[in-house]
Length: 281
DNA sequence: AGTAGCACCTGATTGC
DNA sequence: TGCAATCAGGTGCTAC
Image (cartoon, rainbow, N blue to C red; front, top):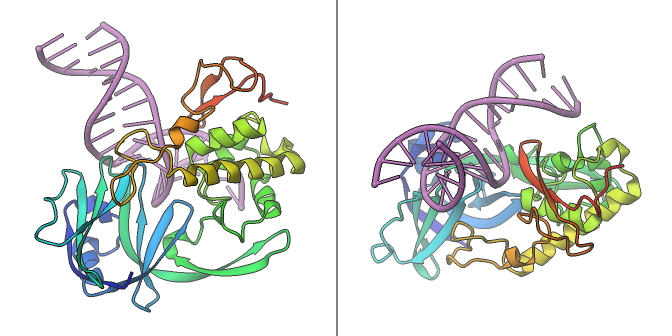
């Protein structure tokens, strides 16, 4: 890091729709700033600006991606899905940073950092964190060391909804999306429609362990890529889609028991599970 | 406060 | 062949 922003080109205004002052103010605020430190919580990521309490904040939605090219004039012409192009000067010279987003659910904005103090039941105590304002309501990431098993269990067991919907609720435990939710539930043998109020502490703890295992395994393989929508900054895909046991496998045999996996819409999201291994109780 | 449902958007795929 | 309907994804927002 340590790259200075020398130019900001917003190619589609809706890419900065959450920035209060609109595209011009976004570009003006960012231009001249130095990108210092990258952080994330769940699916929200941000880069701090200089040593100010401000950050360039981003959410990739479902198809957003950052791509980096060396140079400015010699960088490739912006892709059709390029929504914002930034030109940077770092230690290694000129860089072009593109925010691509085919389906435009993602966004960028510049916003202040705020202090949060969330208690972590289970031993870690209160852990302070400075996060962008739009991230303050988001729970700790499943892989965050400050998210303890007991903390996750307590967060998940509140309320009356089914566990699949609660897993996707980013204000409880963040970072788990539709694919990893199905995978974690399959591994923990929990029915996606199981009411969280009827989920024992022990079973919830097993679900947290399964969630971490799934996410660590996916990370180790570079993520779950079906196509060129899901890539790293160099445009390379991950391989975790080859390891999926439940997601997208409706009708196929369960790897554990051989029963046909079921696909069902739950809370508006397509869900996949084994009707034999994952019993509703 | 917790929950439900819609809006947002594009491109691939399926159905007629 | 053409066109319409459907689907996927994760959030912000409003309404109950």
